Length: 304
Image 1 (cartoon, rainbow, N blue to C red):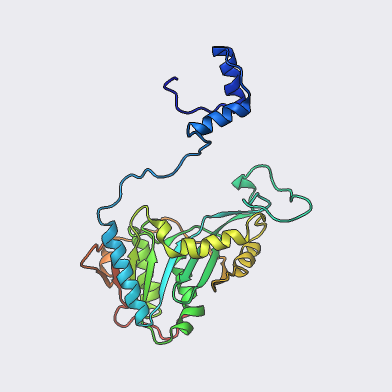
Image 2 (image 1 turned 120 degrees about the vertical axis):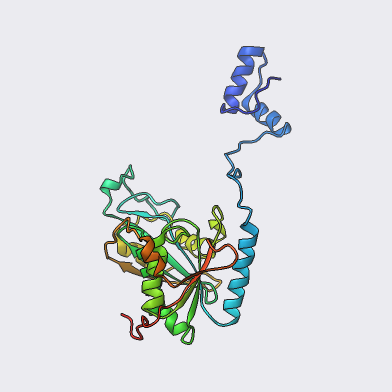
């Protein structure tokens, strides 16, 4: 009867208010039934409001789909890449439940200062082979770390799975260490993958706010989270082992490695250095789509 259309009060509290303010005496059960009859139910917030979709969103999705199909038809690798949520290492609560007689005791607060370290799991998901690699870093999540992780996947798996391929399609988010804007991302792609390994790298970025469509998110990262749900990540080796044991009935296999190197943050690439890159933006939406080719005389046939 008022303008109020929501409340935090429990059904018992609503019943007490009715008795105090209107002299209407009903039980909490009746309140719940009446609210249900009027269409009310307990609801949480729903994430549905956006800052606005890019007008080029549909065009970019069409480009990604076309490029992915073209590479796969030619037998060339297509990988989806991203950094999974960073994880505190130590006896900290991990969301989820496990079957056990007694609940495992963990720290009552998740203070980063009490962690043994922070794991930065960078993932590479081979879409055609339904195979993933996660490089567990213990330093900063930087463009150099991201590119080194992709190079590690290629040297350990990619070059054996695709022995005749000279090109690679990378599907990435538009932000983060492998985003469309960081110059260092393109710089290290040039040096580590194009020049040192000899691959032509084609990159297609998902528009801002559409990272959930990146295949690695729902086809690999979600399965890893299920695998270690409810178990504290007490060491970096624990993280690696949980990732390696991730399997699904649809054929997903995942391998994991540790990267103990320390990566420098804030590496700046100057304008003259950017002009040295063999970078070719695409004719359509070049900010999200580009290729980086090996520079003449740079390819080392025996990378290490």
